[in-house]
Length: 260
Image 1 (cartoon, rainbow, N blue to C red):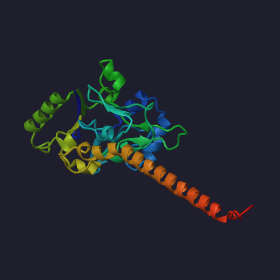
Image 2 (image 1 turned 180 degrees about the horizontal axis):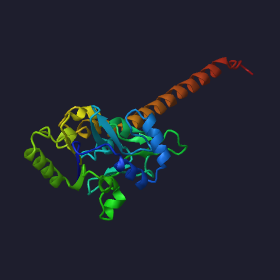
Image 3 (image 1 turned 120 degrees about the vertical axis):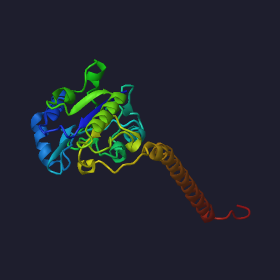
Image 4 (image 1 turned 135 degrees about the horizontal axis):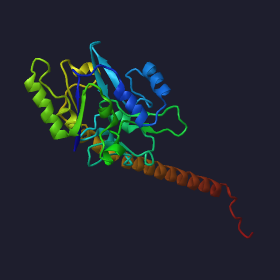
């Protein structure tokens, strides 16, 4: 299972990783630059990866966390989002029905919707899955000039994170963000500043799917049951109205006279 380690102490905010993401996904760089100026958190349909400023002195790459138990996958009713054997959470636009449950479910607020498109899709980082299938690492990893991004197996990334924290305790906070938060994530962070300033939610060891999946997957059945009940009630009301109308018509007919 793949993993990515992001070292905030090494990131200089150059955005070479973002440029590589834009190129890899065939996005017009001018649209990505425009969205950087307008999107409140730097992410948009045209900017699947970004660099956020933390306290004006630190920078960190922000994109899909590729959760071990993805809430977006759990929320998707049609299998448009899946987590594959490599650990990447990928999107299939051919299956998507545009319900946007994934946007509501993601605790990191990553999926983006193409509001301006007449045939909108959901957009998110897929860890350059086509490259992973070809045995290549994500484009952002190759583009980073400061080695702030490391990519490999999640186990190796965890071991490397622990090694750096142990060897330089004065440089890092003693915490690997993503090791256990929300059931664990494929993207891990080590830092010397609090990552909550990046916009990541507070620590939570519980996975969201365990809580929301039963409700979300029951939604179609609940909707179907409600629809059936409404149709049945409508039939009963209509039937009774027809019967009442028929009885009223019979009452108005003249009585047959004797000998007629």
